[in-house]
Length: 143
View 1 (cartoon, rainbow, N blue to C red):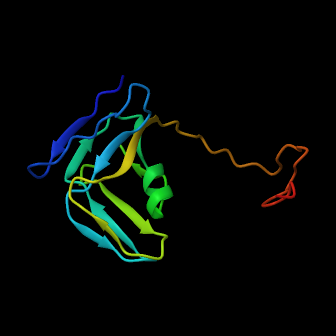
View 2 (cartoon, rainbow, N blue to C red):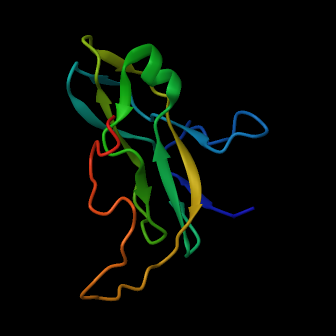
């Protein structure tokens, strides 16, 4: 279990929570009524700020119900909240549908997943090892 400090920036904001025993993500809600016009995106405020322990991040991920039922996703999914960020969490929602979407204060708009962060040490090299794939890129398997 990882402890995250949470600061409510407004009254009446719901604290993110796991909805089922084995949920990996905590649902997070909008703190404002907002309209997302078809084909547009909006940074939706949540009214919370967090303190994440060093060595961890919070990933902001889409809610499958919003995507399936309404065509609403997260533009930069997954978004990252770094351990040194102390500002308000905002979720960049995109309306992929052909109709405007109305977000109401208190609507669950995304989920937060805590993840361990591993730092990489970059080592420059003249050559890289050979593999069966080689330089095969997008669609190299035929799909």
